[in-house]
Image 1 (cartoon, rainbow, N blue to C red):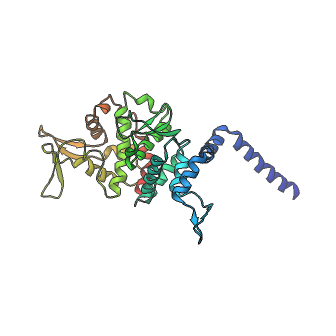
Image 2: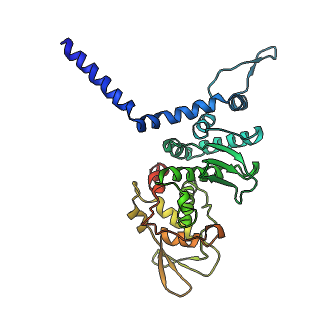
Image 3: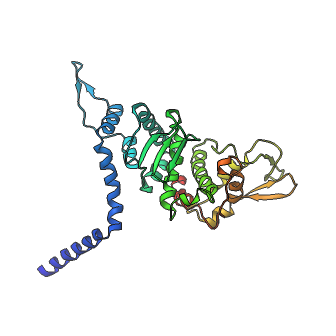
Length: 311
C-alpha cells in the first residue's frame, strides 16, 4: 500500500520534472510572466497607470489615502502586451483610453480573447513622427509605433497588434514579406479588423471597398454589381458574407466565399478573397508590391482568430 502511494508521487514528480526540462514549454509559460514582471518593475508606468485609473481616495479631512487596488482591466491587458513603455504621460493615458474603449465595446470580448490568446507582446511602444500612416509595427525590433499622440486610436493599435501576431505566427516572421507578399500581410490584417468592425455594426474601414461598383438588386431577389459608380459597397457586403460562415474557417470556405460582380467589359465575375486583395494593392503605392497566391501563403491568423470574432 505504502509503495503504491510512493510510486504515484514519484511518477507525478518525474512528469513535472520532464515538463520543466522542456525549455520550449518552460519558456512559453515563463515569457508572459517575465514580461509582466518587467512591466511592473517600472515604477513610473505602474504609478502613472494606477493613479490615473485608480486615484487615491480622500478621507473626511481631505487627506489622500493610499489605495492598493489592482490595476484596471485595460492596464492589466497592456501589461501583458508591452514589455516596455516609453510613452509620456499624455500619450500613455490616451493609449489606456483606447484599450479601455476596445474592451468596453459590444464585441470587446472578441478583442480581449484575440489579444490574450495570441500570447505575444511588443518590445516597446513609442512615438515616431517619420511614420507614413497612423501606426506601425517594426518587425526588426518588435516595437509598436505611433506617428503622434493623435494617431493613438483603436484601429491603429489593433491593426499593429495583428501584425505582431502575424510576425510570431508565420514561420520566419513577416520581414520576408516586406516586398513580395506585402499585399497578403496587409490585406489579411485589414480583413480581420473589418470583420470585427462590421460585426459591431460599423462600416468597413478599408475605404468603402477596393473597387468602384454599384449594387443592382434583381427582380428574383439576388443582386449583382456593375463597375460604373463610386458607391463601393461590394467589399463590405463580402465581409458580411464571411461573417455568415460557420466556424472553423478553413481556407476552402474562405476561398469559396465570393460575391458576383459585372465589370466594365460586361462580363460577370465572382469576387473573393484573392480578387479583393489584388484590388486592395492598387489603393496605396506602399501596398502595390508583388503578391503571393493566397493558396500558397494562407491567411493563417485570419483562420485562427475567426472563432473569436464570431462569438
